[in-house]
Length: 297
Ligand SMILES: [Zn+2]
Image (tube, protein in one colour):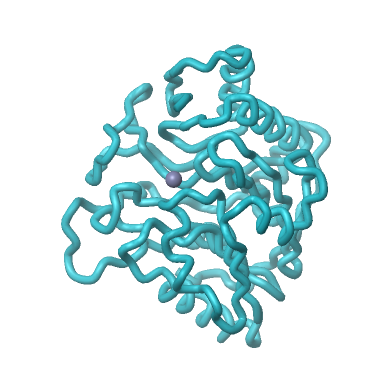
């Protein structure tokens, strides 16, 4: 899983023309597994996160289905001075352990770097913050608490949610975009090194629960505007609830999803989401699209 660690984390330039975009996407996109199958309801032995290295320093962790039907995805991004763990899972499993082992292996081959681990969240819902206690008050770890005030202060937002701020992990810069609507403290992260946009529960192959319709519409528009002038190799959220068959999602609470959809979404699909949302003009209705459903709560 730690193949190709020596490849550089060179940041990519903003692309201003479509041809430049496709070139940079090809240069920076990583590889995905053919399936993210997370197992059935029964744990065989000790449950473990599935770990995949998308690109050097970009790790995707998936919680096994037997520990929680939500089976969320977590992301660990490593720079020269800091690493960022995005989310701590839905509970019922040791999450600090695999993170420690990835970072331990990385440090062994990178002269001890990074020294600090930042633990933050895509948003504050229970299935993404349940492992926070495993990181709180640990030496070398900065835990950003899940509330909006803590998020604003740590990332340096002055105007919330309009500001777009950045987080420098050391030769790896992330743009941080506030996307309230699903949850008030929601964030998206754009990794310039891979051109991946991380969108949490705001955009993934499944049920996109909208709690604040006005905020959600502003957030999808903000994501579309942000990605209009940058390459996007993949958009990755924090669940898969969709089956491979278009317009079909697994019922809430399904643990075993042998035929689930792929994780990655495209910018074209983000534009489709935003168009559907803007067309509702504040009066949201449940709207099924091939790979996701807009689902007002
Ligand atoms: Zn979630």
